[in-house]
Length: 598
Image (cartoon, rainbow, N blue to C red; front, side, top):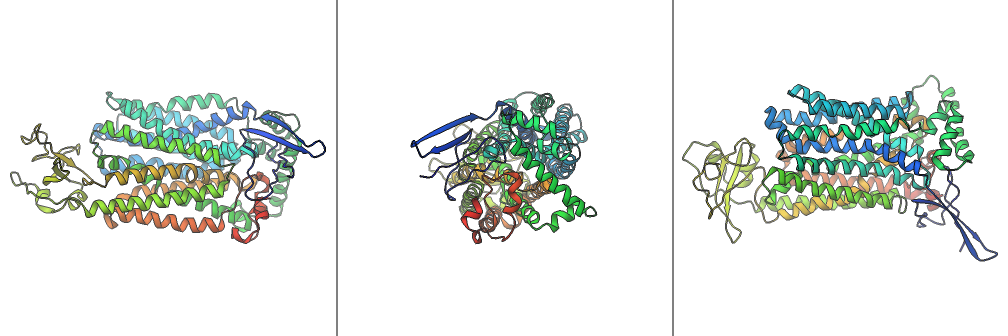
């Protein structure tokens, strides 16, 4: 059949495709293929991606690792910190959410810094901030110091979350850009996994929480030192008039001396930006973004990607994992952390599925398939919670030895466990029935009751009869469904919903709007991250747990319809070609297949 040409090593080189289903070459290597019809044989020239690009990407994604580590470590460190500093419920929520709030604000500031001082200096600042935050937390001796440390980490996360995807996208060859940007999401997931392994390992150690929080300083210092020797983005340098330096860096990044085609494309884009600036010198970048139809459309879609990533409940799943694991019968805190690390491992491993597929099947298909799996998983979890509620055991005994408000207020396990002061005390027979059940006031550690059969000093606890206090859940034969739903959710989310919003946002804006638009979409991500995280408990109380998951399911369905209609495929396009893709009709299906892929 006809020849397929994958030209050169420049990020601007296109890969013409026969039709939408044609797969690009499998690029960990960049391949040039020419068909010679006269002698009926094919000559293949293979040139590896320069190791310098891989090193640069790995050093960049340490920022993603720190993002994940500092986000995930709080789940394992909160319990010992709460005991040490006597944190109440509000203080626990503040300990978690202050980082998210700071990240949202400083993502905007990070976008400004990217434009003013460059991608490299912003990354170096983030490394310093991460190290300082980790040291402050590891040495904290008061609640105020803890909050200050978490706020400082939020600054670093905000800077890293907006800078790393842009930097990788602007230094990567177009053929493997999707994979390299997606690698950042893999490092975020890996950071979460490593943080839970660290928490599980250090859980029984005295002052282990200090080590959990302080370990983040190590990769931050490694990134700081390594990035001192990394180059600035060539596109940023051309924008600032440092053309020769940009050409030299392009040669290092591509491993060839002839980078004129890519340089000229970047130069042309910058010159067009200068002309546009001269014509609209009295207009701010905000006005320019919202009056340029193509950029406005790209920003709306990019912000929607980040919005739906959050409102389909990823942080609820991560937050609620410990409770779901307790539902399966794990009561020891350290053991629960280890089980939680297993679920984080699934999230980490399946991110690499996305990396393997992003430049083969494309961003659009991968994202939609991932979202469909997330919707199914959310629906499955909602059904599991509904079945749990319908089969919740009754309170069969009333404890009257000592006045206990919990013992007389409720008649079912579901009612009992909705009260944050109460727990459901029961024993399980060999036939799987829950008997001798009582609602009792829970102790401070939430693993025993203050009085009755589930208290530490109860005489009813014996070898033949073991009582369990269920706090915040009801014993149910359907617990496995919730665990399976959580695992399938993470397996579905990790390849597409996790990395694609970051990958797509890093490549769909023109150079003049790239930092601003990425800071806006990152702000949207962190804002709804915070909103979903702090409303889940109250939402569960207002509309039940299954109601909350059904609500997230409905969000997912709306998102699938929206993106099916308006999300174009960006695979195989250079960063300088994206504006044309977002011009014209909003609806993808109104475009021809050739318009989408050529």
